[in-house]
Length: 293
Image (tube, rainbow, N blue to C red; front, side, top):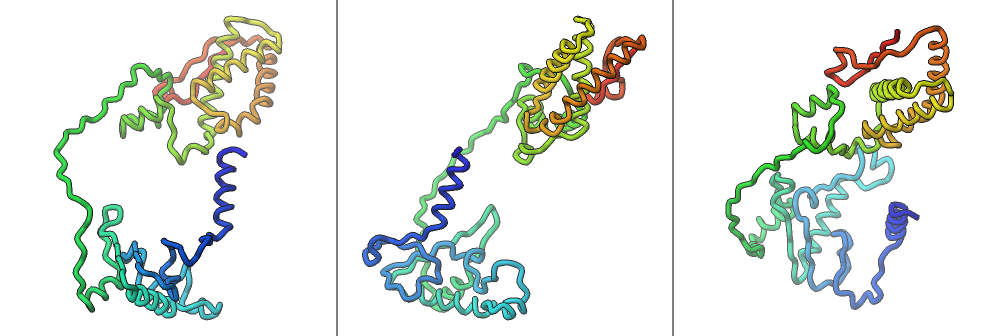
C-alpha cells in the first residue's frame, strides 16, 4: 500500500472500533458527549465549547427536515431534543466541580455564550473565574514586502490570461507563470482545447524548422523529429502528463494523418517557407500562422 492507502486503512480501522478502557472503575479521564453524562458518578466535569454554535438550547436534527417528517419516521421531534439537551445540562451542573468554557470569537466574529450558560448566570449569578492566559505587550515592527525577482526565470510565451494575472497581481503572475505553480483546485484540471491548439501549432513550427535544417523524406526520421518537437513543447509549456492525457491519446493518429498530408502536399510542389505568429495573436501568445509557398 502507498501512503494514502495506508492512511485510509488506518482511519477505517480506528473508526470501526469503540474504545473501552481496560479498567472502567479506575479510569481517570473520560471524553463523552454531554448526553452520556447521565448515570455516571464523576468527581469533576469540564464542558468545553459552551457557546451558541456548539451548544444550542434547541438543537436541530441533522439534515433538511420539516416538522412533519420526524413524526412520520418515528424520530424525536425538536421539542424532545431540546428537552433532552436541557436535562443533560442540568445533570452536568449537579456535579461537585464543573468548569464551563466557551469562546468569545470564531474566525474574527464575536460568538455569544450558550443559552444554557446565560440562563445559569441569570439564576445563580456566579462569579466568572479569572482568565488564566497571561497578557503580553507586543512592540511594533515594520514589515517589508518581499520583492520577488523573475529575471533568472525564462518566460518564452505571454498569453492574454498571463498578462491579466500580471496586471491584477504580480505575485500571482510570479507564482503561476514563472514558478509554474498551480492552485489547489487546478491540480487535477485538464487543459482545454485552446491550450492544445497552442501546443500543436508550436509543435508543428519546431518540426518544420528542424525539417528545414535536416531535409529528408524518410517516414521514420520525420516521425522522430515531430516526436522530439512534441516533447520539447510539452516541457516548455510546463504541461504534466496527467493534464495532457486526454490529448495524448489522440496524438498518434493526428501525427500519422499530418505526416501523410504533408507528404502529399509536398508531392504537389508546395514547400514550407516559415512559421510565425500573426499580428493579432503575437501579443496574445495564441495561434501561429504557417506560410507555404
